[in-house]
Length: 111
Length: 114
Figure (cartoon, each protein chain N blue to C red):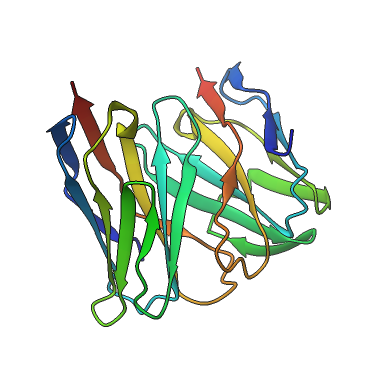
């Protein structure tokens, strides 16, 4: 079952913050986050495993609420280079070998 | 360079033709995948292979036949192409039980069926 992302699109000015949410109706083992720029491949940002841990990567961090089967991606002090479409991908079990992606959130950062 | 490489990058063909897309990874990963990204950007898994063995086939039409000659290669052959097959096809790889390592995607093959 496909996870649901919200919002579908966000427009920000450089320096503003954004939060992208990813929800699943099924119990999850892991949540991945990827960014895809126009005409390019998705690029891995981070993975969160069952256990509710929070991870960080420069000014981009994420959390995973195992009870609610929700993950959130936080982008702080956004830069122009953060523009793109963000996808969450979910796995139901360890080594499931099947990442199911949400529908994507388009993030536009304006100067 | 260590990477997942796909060829060709663009493919324009007529309905009814047969075409192949090749994928190679030199990351030493055990698992390889084919994903289809449609015009609405939805990324849908098609196949998953682990060390040359088919693990997942997501109810993809029989016209699509993946082949993995070794764990570093995963090719996709498509017979009798239809207009609805037009999309970007991504190959990806990951280590088995990846822990903190995500998927590495190839640059994609944009298939246009006319």
